[in-house]
Length: 195
Image (cartoon, rainbow, N blue to C red; front, side):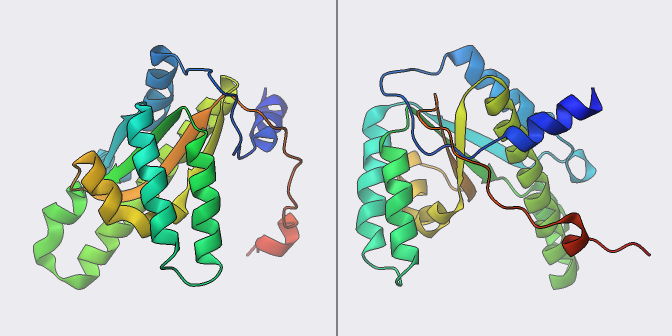
């Protein structure tokens, strides 16, 4: 069991190309969201909110907006945003992941040090939720890309989605139309110390 689970984790790939015309069933979407909400969170505050975007007209608005925004970013970042726009354009489904900031709000009066720590708790919790969703998508043979570069477009995406929470990521989801090779990983000896 342990070996199979580790093999599965190692087999997960970021998928940026999706099969055209294949719709992700509603129950599958719910299963992915359920995997996200099932992760651990700081003090069980569950700071996430997921906005599922299936309307092609809304997806197209995000694509057009992000292409326009890319023209105003520094070199390198503009290329990454254009690439993300291309991924989004062919995606049948997007999930916008938000931070509702329940911990930050609860302890905001205690000063900067506490507020900063609470914010980190929330980000860690949401990252765990996204990782669970990524693994769940892979488990049901879906591809998923975690598009953090879209944070450059937070204000515009929030306007399109009528959302006021803090955007943490935009996930593109669909049936894979590619088979990426494994990327190089640092050796365990490079990234760990034993004391």
